Length: 218
Image (cartoon, rainbow, N blue to C red; front, side, top):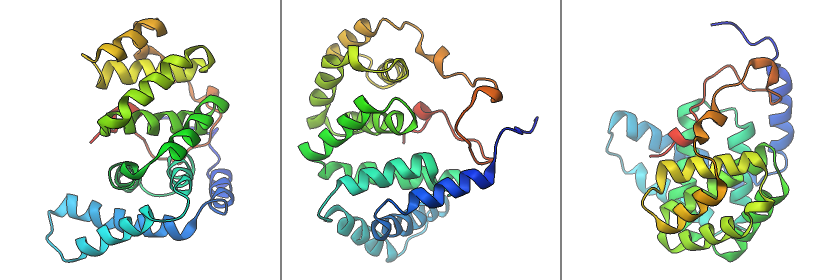
């Protein structure tokens, strides 16, 4: 494999450290500790009383005064996290299944604002999280589909492609999602997610391979 000489790991690390200062680090550390345990449990099928501690940590995080902090943590880990791929995936997954269920209108609106106002990585990662919440929690699905349908013309092209890909992968058979897919008019969204040549990539990435976002679904 040819080394990507455009990647500057030290610059990526510097950005990660700078962004880390903007999030709720106490909550981040609690989630990370739990993610490490659940990843170990998944790999080794261990039985341990520590599961109670890990669950309690996540419950405590779900009770912090501002759950938008958790959204910021999710977006930080998606773009700037320095953890290995498997730990990063576990980290994002437990936020989705253990804290996403506590999201109310305020948290959904916060994600919607990011989606509409940021066409770069932060906006894309917010959209991924938003769509996954819609699939994971049926009571939130219609709100999310209504938001997407009402704002199709405001979505950046990258967001439209991602939404079409998500619908094609996870919402086949849903009538409302089919209406949105037809309005998006993107028959083959996969083509937009093929890896571009390295010289076109503007975001520095660590020398590890991440899955395509739609493959990260447990």
